[in-house]
Length: 154
Image 1 (tube, rainbow, N blue to C red):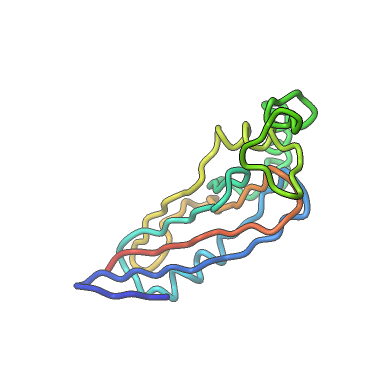
Image 2 (cartoon, rainbow, N blue to C red):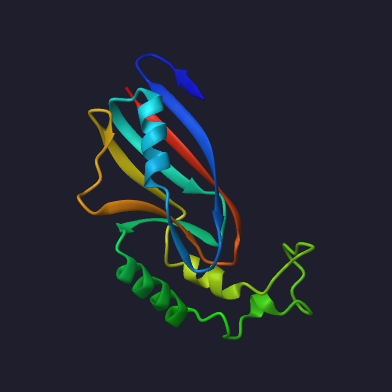
């Protein structure tokens, strides 16, 4: 959806991404580029936002060995097999879902990451560096995730 005002354009699109494991870096750069192109914004910015507390948005290099290193690092920081109060379903009563799974580790990992990234749009293109790519980072388990891409500018 594109809205235009006094010289201001706003384009908001929803993206559904499916992860097949966790942690998993999923490159969504091409989808963001498509939304920027459709927006008609020449100068402005794009915000890429995850609607989840266990899935982050990060900018980094898409190099397979580096991605393995970063996934392993997250496991060392907050291992899935560690003890988390959040995983004690006998005591915890808040924000419980029918198919709740023990995911304290993914919330703790997310605490160190971002829910969104903002990238300048310059001359109609994302101003990403040479090796920069935009990732949805699944921290919890295989599942569908929702990402909002909003492009604003003139």
